[in-house]
Every structure is written in C-alpha cells, then in structure tokens.
Image 1 (cartoon, rainbow, N blue to C red):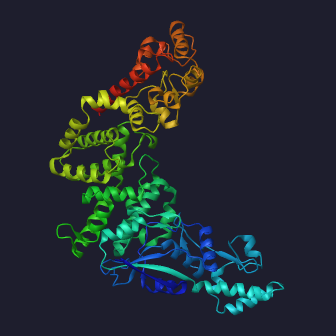
Image 2: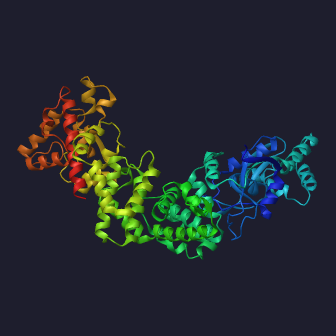
Image 3: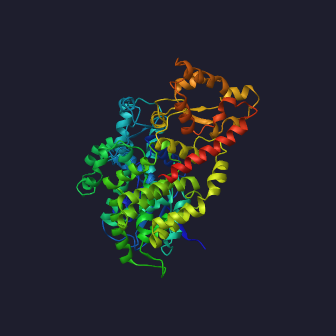
Amino acid sequence: MAKYTVQQQPVETLLTWVKSGQVAIPEMQRPFVWDSTKVRDLLDSLYKGFPVGYLITWQSADVGLKDGSKSSYRQILIDGQQRITAMTAALLGQPVVDKSYKLKRIKIAFNPITEEFATQTPVIERDVAWISDVALFLNATSTFGATKKYLEANDVLDQSHIEESLNRLSAVRNAQVGIITLDEDLDIETVTEIFIRINSKGVALSSADFAMSKIASHGLLGSNLRKLIDYFCHLAVAPHVYNDIAENDDAFALSGYMEKIAWLRNDSSDLYDPTYTDVIRVAGIKEFKRGRLAALVSVLSGRDFETRTFDEEIAVESFARLEKVLLEIVNQYSFQQFTMTIKSAGFIAPRLISSKNALNFAYALYLQLRSDNELNEGEIKRIVRKWFVMSLLTGRYTGSFETAFEADIRRVGEIGAPAVLDNIERSSLSDTFWQVSLPMDMESSSVRSPYFLVFLAAQVHSNARGFLSKNITVGNMVEEVGDIHHIVPKNYLVKNGISNRADYNQIANYALTETPINIAIKDRAPGDYMGSVDAQIVDGTLRLGEITDAAQLAANFAANAVPDFIRTVTTESYQEFLTSRRTLMAAYVRRYYDGL
C-alpha cells in the first residue's frame, strides 16, 4: 500500500504556496550550499522541460513551525529546500544566505540567441546580447515590453526566434515540478527512514539532516537552537566568520544565544571541530540516553516510548531539555576543559584521533559526569581519558556504535562510570588482550591504524624523543608533521628481497624521526647506520643525530619500543624484529593506559 501521493504543480504555483505558507519550510541546517552553476543548470532544465527531481512534503498537524504556530495540515517540506531556494533566488530575485552567512543575490543570465544560461559576470552584464538577470525580465511589469526593449538593443535577423526564446523563458514559471506528499498518518520513524534514503541533487541526506529539520520546525526556539548548532560548528572551524554571522542574523544576535558561542571567535584549537551531526549525537547521548538520531527525532516529536503514542507536552519538555544540553555542549569552560583532557592523554592533534564517535561519546560522558556531581574534576578527567583510549583500542564505537552508545550511557546511569569502566577493562582489556590480541592487531600497514596512533599518543604523553633524537620529541613532530620513518629502511628491504608492500610497510617498522636523521639513515642497513651512532658515542663526533651517550641511546630505544638487537637485524631476521617490536609497543601502550 502506497504511503504517499504524487502530483505535478507549476513552478509559479509552488512559489506562491511557499510565499503564502501553504508549503511550510522549516529552516534547514545549511545555508544555501549550491553554487551559481547549479542554479544555472536548474533553470536550464526547467527551460528545456527536463525533470528536476521531486520535492517531498509531509502533512502533519503536530509539527511546530518557525513562527511558533502549528502546521495545521499544511505541507511541510522535508526535502527540496535547495531547489526551492534556487528557484526563489533566480526567478524572484530574492537574496540568499551563502556559506559565509552573508546575504547575496544569485544572478543568472540568458542569451535568447543561443538559448544559453550563464552565471552573470561583468562582461555578460555589459553585453546587450544577454538578458543579464532573468529575475528582472520575469518580474518586469510587461514581458512584452522587455522583449521589445531587447529587440531594439540587438540587430538580429530572426526576430521570431528571439521572441520564441523569450516566450519559453517566461514559460519557465509554468514548468511542472513533481511533489511527493507523505501520508499524514505515517509515524516519525517511517518519515525518518524515507528522509534518510533520499539523495538530493548534490547533497546526500542523513538522519542528522532530518533531526536538524525537526529541531528547526519547532517555532522560534527550534529555529534558534538549529542556528546555535550550525553557528557553533561553523565557528569552531572558521572563527573569522563571527562578525558576518552577527551582522547578517540580527535576530539571532539579539536572542542571547550568540553570546554563548562568542568565545569561539578567539579560539584557535582544532582538536575537536564537531559537525552538526556530532553535536546532535552528543546531545542525544547525554540528555536523552539515545544513540540513534531517529530515536532523538521521536523524542522531540513527543513520542512516549511506553505507550507508543505522541504527546505535545513531551515534545515541549524535550525541547526544553534539548536547549539545556546544547548550552552545556557549547559552554566555553566545558568544551575547553574536555579538549584539554583529551590532549592530556597525548592526543594533541586531530591526526592522532582515529574515531570521531569515540570523541563524541567521551564528551557526552564528560558532560554527564559533571552533571551528576558525584566525582571530583580530577576523577572525572581520569575516567574520560581512560574511556576514550579504551574505546579506541577496542573499536568499541565502530560497527553498531549507536547501540553501544545507548548501552554504555544507560549503564553509567545505573551503576556509575567507574564501575562500568572497571567491568569493561576486566572483560576487554585482560592480560590476553595486551599480550596476544593487541600485538596481533598491530600487524597492519596503515598509518591511520588506531593502535599506531594510540602508540604515538602514548609517546607524546611520556614526552618521548623521536627515534635517535636527543632533543626533538614525538610531540614536536606530531605538531609539525614529522617524518614517519622505516626503522629497517624500505629500500634496503626491497633491494634484499622483501618487495611486498604489506611486509615492509608495517606499523612495527614505523617511527617518528627528524628529517635530517631520516636523510642520514637513507637506505642503510640497521647495523650500518647504528654503527655511526655507536661511533659518535665513542668519540663524540656527530655523524647521525645528536646522541653521544650510551644511556641516552638505551632510553631512546625504550621510548620508541625498539628491540635491543636492532643492530643485527637483516632481511633474514626482519620478521623476528617485527614480532618483537609489536610486543614492545603493546607493552608500552599498556603502561601508558595504566598510568592515565
């Protein structure tokens, strides 16, 4: 049985519905993300009678709109805002908000002679052969008069062709657009699933998109909360757009929410730059104990999970809770204390973090523990550090991560985070894990392997020097993007018969190394380049690096988990070297984890 109806409507009727509110558009999560070439292509398709995709609306009486009213069985647009905005901008001449939150006009030109559309440029604007702005032509008092003016300005032989072209341009307003209307009795989960499966032109939709749309549809509060999320995420990446937002969104600037994120204009950290998906996930986990974004949409719609009914009072209460948790998430103290906590575990740069999901849960956990007010700040940070590293090492939030989110946060609420973490450590971080599983997991060639990145974070945490470095730390090189060097050089291995990339590119053969040291080692056998180091320890004349003391060299080997027999490693003993170093790296990570 169909869950929708399909109809065709002319563009002009559709735009009239939008202006009158018959089609209600919840403010979406994005500014207008299409560039002018996509707008041009859309007009060209309408002009030629090509299909431009369906708009999808949902008729639902219980959805709050951005003006604070209810939808009252008006059609709520859940997919197609970019196309509607493009039509409004190009055909009506209304300005749009661009990616930098500035108002701008998108002007599309049309050449009646060649029947070509183009983005307006200064050259086109001066060229009388072009209608430099189709919006001005279509909204002229008389298109007949506008056509006559064009003909007077252009000496063309075939005037009938020009008239036909401009008549077809005028007829764009009558081009048919398909509208899919979802049944009003569909439950929120079904609507969410439909939404997620849609692929709009150029923008793949997700459950987070629908959640943002749902948030925005809840009156003025929802509109402001949507903007709070969007602006927070944008400023975290681009602090310089703060003034643009403040100048172009007066209502939000005066709402009181803008001041909550004003601190970001002076923030330079990029360790954790959450997207709106991340923010919604953190909010869902912390405040609603929901890992699935579709479940969060249900809560915001007033879903009573026990009776499986919808209650407006629940929706109102849920939005109040959403506001509360969002203000916690964007709070300067909370956010910066959390990022410092992650940095204190050695994760000083985004390149060391292999799982955004693990970071999101750690932030939700941090906020939850602070709200519970049962542990002191030091204990909270210790638990968050260990939980974050544990989740990276065990891949806890990969696969069915939403289910894991819900199970973990609910268990924390039942018996407390310290007890839950202890149970996880007993079951997942046993001696077998450290001595067998982790060394086996390290049999990888990926520099993005979570195990290699945790090892680097462990080195940063312990202030370890780079391989064969006396003064330059791993942390220095992580921040400045130092070389990942093969301890047993790749070219040496290849020249001597080990040509399989998967063999010579092993994380057990990787170490962060200063560029001059890397260059000095080149493709020499370990016994050869270590001979240079040993010689300078004897006579003090620097040949490779700056280490001139045997105790310093031994400490450097330990800090980089390099086995003592590195001097005697050849292609014949290379596999033995890899096995030994994996064991040493795993033991290094274990000591690090225990000391967090």
